[in-house]
Image (tube, rainbow, N blue to C red; front, side, top):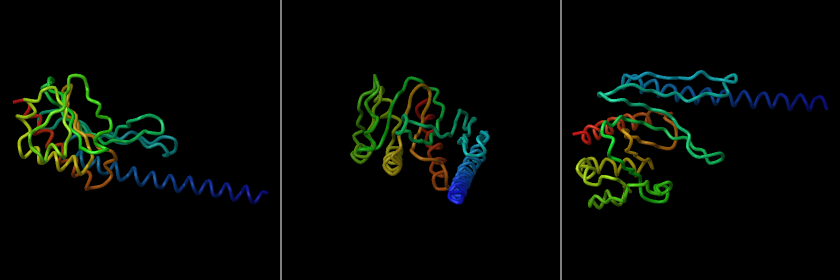
Length: 207
């Protein structure tokens, strides 16, 4: 009986140690990518301290000003209880607070959660390739038509289709949200490109 208890204790300790090592490695990769984001955009890195002996490791975030506007990168939880998921989000300040829109990929995953906010109606650009790839709702179709040039529509169609991400515009913010964490170089570089695009889009809207 004693040997069985000892074996169970060893297995428990070993499992806990393995889990701690995995958490430590994963958190280190994520922190490293956020540190590079902070350096790339000249932002401040916020890395909360680990808790409970390192078993609870809050995700980092970066924030500050870039190209004359507030910007942030962070991981946010969505959903409730067993359906909670983590999204990585980049937010860019938009001085125009009147425009509201939501752009997401078409298809089953793109349709989830898009019930249509009050004051926003479905919008079509007339660009067949774009309209086939991206669902759009907005309260100002004329403004959106003016700023979504051929080049921007092509970028959005490709980016949203491949990432299953969503772009939200409203309340003085443009946000890009994608499921998952920024834990590798490829993902980080995509978010860097997205941040530049959102800044360009914000400038176009404010003209």
